[in-house]
Length: 80
Image 1 (cartoon, rainbow, N blue to C red):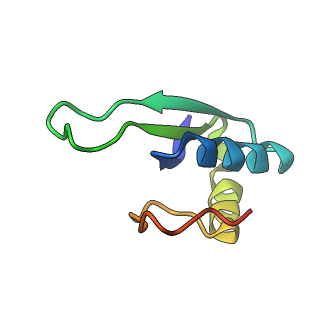
Image 2 (image 1 turned 60 degrees about the vertical axis):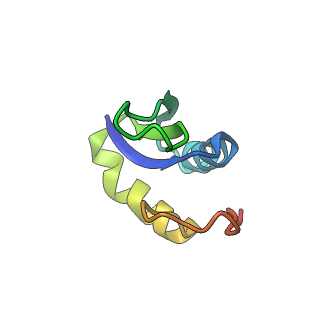
């Protein structure tokens, strides 16, 4: 399994998970808490893909959706 996307907005991660599922990429959403050494960070939801062989397609889908691991402004939204 590989982590492909995370966000403090669980609804955003759920929407991306739906996009992955529609594309035939087996995935699951997990909740992750902030590490103790970074208490000011909100907990994030994570999207994990089940099959490593789907990594390239999943990454390309993230690019197509305009998603990534860079921190975004709170005003930026997920455009589905």
